[in-house]
Length: 195
Image (cartoon, rainbow, N blue to C red; front, top):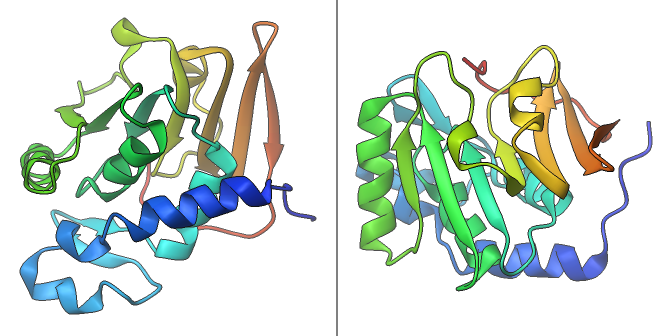
């Protein structure tokens, strides 16, 4: 399967945003020495900080624009939330949601310490995303589902985009004319389950 083509300008913006958001600042002190390694790093509470090359690909596919309202589902340590905030710019808004209360606290502490204009909220059990605050221009999902979560598709604005690992395939959903249009990228991915 061929990969989804991404504009070189988007790739450059993602690289710049990731470079300005050091991964080490979002890792617990005992694993910060692993920040430059291109593999997932355990951060506690049965969670990982995702592999940088995977994060880069997801963000390239998401193609966040300045001014976008962005939802980061499964925000973990807050690293992707912070990168998304850089991409959305001062005119944008980024909200992370995380099921583990300790990670919500940890992630918000990291965001505050790095001066990031974003927040992480505790997810409501049984509710995906933030339906009461929809629609969102972009939704990033950093947990794997067996099928595309229709609850999240329903939170996309017209012209919006969702990126999520679905049954091992990185999947892009574009909302056009009120209908979700889905396509899969090349490669196989492994994430913690979406709950």
